[in-house]
Amino acid sequence: MHLRELLLKYKRLILLALSLVVIEDVAWIVEPYIFGKVIDAVIDIQVLSKETKIIDDSTKTDEEKINTLKEQEYIYNETEVDDPKSFFDSLKIEIKKESDIDILLPLSIWILAFAVNSGVGALRRSVDPKIFLKIYTKIATSISRMAVHKKLSVSKTTARVQLSHEFINFLEFRVPELIENLISITGAVIALYFFDWIISLTCLCIVVPMYILNRIYLKKVMVLQKEYHDSYEDVYDVFAKRDPVHVRNYYTNLARPQKKIANWGAFNFAMMRIALLLIFLVVLYVAIGLDEFTAGELYSIVAYLWTFVTATEYLPELLENWTSMKDISRRLKEEN
Image (tube, rainbow, N blue to C red; front, side, top):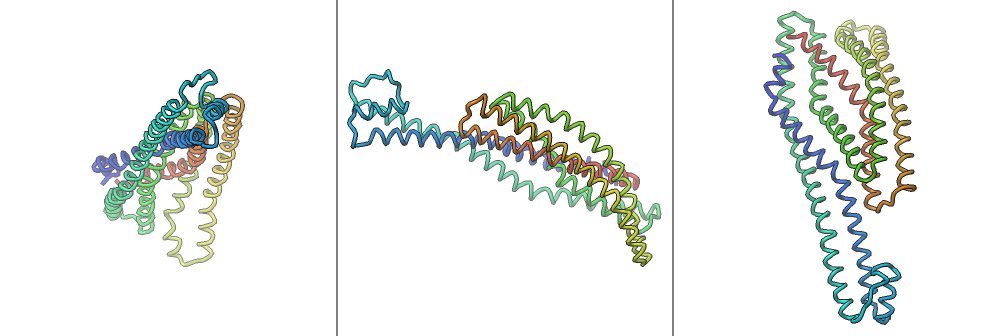
């Protein structure tokens, strides 16, 4: 059976698996924003608690309490208090209401997002193996059938079955990771816009040169992956000769394209790190010189920035797997 036919046959199951990935990752990407609100709410409660302690301080007179509240900017300096007892009682009631509202709403939303992320993630890890093991069984059977028909060698047939397993691994693990990274990068840029458009624009501008750099990397690695897989298909024939010198020479040659891929990966990584350094400098400038962020907002900004950094750093490895998958797919099509 052709690989495309297999994907079409199981498209509903594959779409189900990928839909779970999207739901899990979207719930995850909104968590830092919501948790930042929780942090601010906790800090506000601590401030309100200090305000309550001032009101309940039995060592101070009512006038001293009012002056302290004004000095610490809990109430306006222009506030006139005719009846301190009634004023303090109404202030306590207001503090209690603000405490309940401030913490319950963001905390409830964060727990919901965390539950969706965890629950869907657990479900996906149960469903995915069942889907992709079925697909791998079909692919292996198809390769075996066509190998008999075309009278291919055992070495080439076995190697291609193993390569097809890499393809399934890509579908099961790398595609979800690719979706996760795309959601992380896009979500981080959008979320940062709500805090400061300069930070968001800087991240967005960095994406363009990184995309160009990754395109160049993709073209170079694609040629090297083909060279590696061409050699890999002869691995069983090499061992069949029972010649240690021949085996050593074979693996020495097999390592050459992998070393070149590693060099290109290192170059790509270095260029991306330089670009990401610029982002950190811009964020520091904005955070210190331009805006006054709350503690929760700073947490959210750092979390989204780190999400953006880790997602972009992982792209070269995903692209390398993508090029490998494309070459393996071409070889599997030859079996049709």
